[in-house]
Image (cartoon, rainbow, N blue to C red; front, side, top):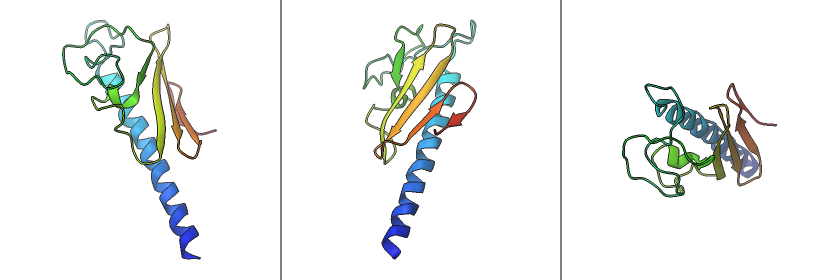
Length: 117
């Protein structure tokens, strides 16, 4: 009886950490907008999966970027239970975030809110 409750609590904690990871990613993306033009940049970390060299923000070249990279971390630095998290840049200087848990539960950010279908 105790084991199912502990597993449910762990799942809930992992999902809460995943939502927090998305919020931190949103903050990182918005913080790294170009201060003059307001356009999205890659934050100076490049677009490689493990790019971590901090330089002056450059114009965004890639249309996708790992969430951890946008936060200045290695791509593998994700919360427990998170399989993938990717930022997709739109043509209208907008972006979405898609996060997939190990359990295949998904969370997304569409520019206005974090949702889980």
